[in-house]
Amino acid sequence: MIAFIFPGQGSQKVGMGKALAAAHPICRETFEEADAALGESLSRLCFEGPEDQLTLTENTQPAILAVSVAAYRLAASLGLQPSFVAGHSLGEYSANVAAGTFDFGDALRIVRRRGRYMQEAVPVGTGAMAAVLGLDAVLVAQACAEAAQGDIVSPANMNGAGQVVIAGSTAAVARAGERAKALGAKRVIPLSVSAPFHCALMKPAEARLAPELRALRTADPRVPIVANVDAEPKRTAAEAIEALVAQVSSPVRWEDVVRRLASEGVTTYVEVGPGTVLSGLVRKIHREATVASFGTPDDLAGLEALRS
Image (cartoon, rainbow, N blue to C red; front, top):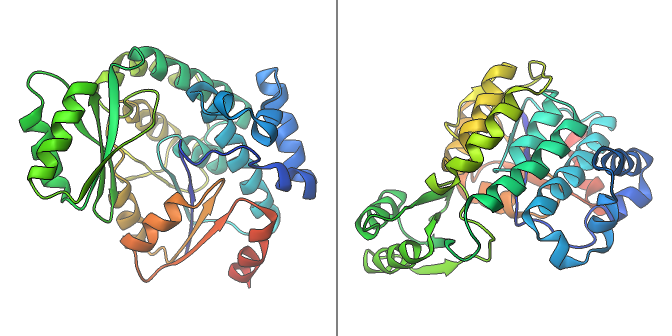
């Protein structure tokens, strides 16, 4: 049984999608559709940069979505269809497009606003994120609780394999990192992000995005989407939308998502879109699984092997 998994912010790089668009008309048409939906050349930003513009949250999110959907459409045109889909943070929007919950153009427009709202929720420099390596998630949560001192800091991404990302106010994240090291963390790595995603500081962004998500024209997904917020399969449009609303200020439970997919019988995971971040995490969480990534024409051979 195959699951398609879709990457989130951090997987972007200048040049992504360019080879796909050059080699495959279905991918080229997807980028043309994205440009038309946004009224600007998102494709040029993906293919040529500049990097400082691509890494702006409100540009990064639609850019990764566009590359992921282009790759998905090519995979689907070759006859490869998943039994489940999931995505990491932003990637859950790509998963919903793949499942048919809402259309590509609406998704592009809403993730652009999602990026803007998340950026505007917290003034630049007042929030931070850090990856805590080699410490159990329960102890990371304990470090956050003991270091908060009235500020917000909490686990934001439970990625598995001893990697938990924390988010909150800058000072509280620094204190929690020190406390985590005292509790046995091997390393604490500050992340280069523009806002503290997936924590309570994102509540204003959630409040702005919620009515827009609920107003989308939707259909029940063709395949279940295992959601970040609770690692439960969403089989109706209403469930899928509410999961996206809650996701803004809730932690991404990626380890639980992968374990749920495994429990549903998934044995093969295909990371669809730029980068290989999720492939690496899955290999550590579900060690017996077959894992492939598909974001460039060079990856086609691996995809063909799965189909045979």
